[in-house]
Length: 216
Image 1 (cartoon, rainbow, N blue to C red):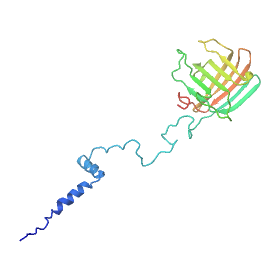
Image 2 (image 1 turned 60 degrees about the vertical axis):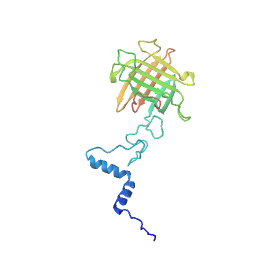
Image 3 (image 1 turned 180 degrees about the vertical axis):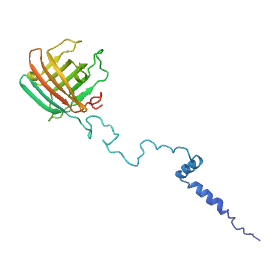
Image 4 (image 1 turned 120 degrees about the vertical axis):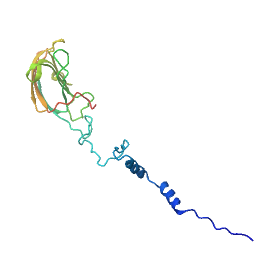
């Protein structure tokens, strides 16, 4: 006589517990961790994880390289007369103040340069080169009458150079006046080159930038 055995059923409760454990999401582990340590700070999101409010390019807290799309460019007004020829333009010059410049070293306190290092002006912008560097002193705005003025142009009679610093060979004569306004300054220059060519220049920097030049 053959006996037939019915299949043995496993208890239902352990099976349900096993399935719940296998399907437990990662978020539940984090919740359990918070239950174990309610005062602990939550784990940081990995680098590159999307945030709740993405920051717009050029918005608050975002530092853009100079010349990058969306960066704010402080412009400089230039009015120069050399040998009866006048040059006027609004350019992207680099204007800066060097706080490390003192009368005891050879650094320049005020510096203006166009184009700034690494900048290639587009076709519709001037392609001459302008530089003005002024030593610190007791004159108004902390300036002195020791400076270097340089203008280089493709036309020779519109190029000029004057240097009056005491630690280098002097070339030409002149005076410079600095008038601070807001975040920038206006520079008024009047001089003559070594050849006797008269130069008058007004350079108005709307804003001083930090010591970092050329997009970098």
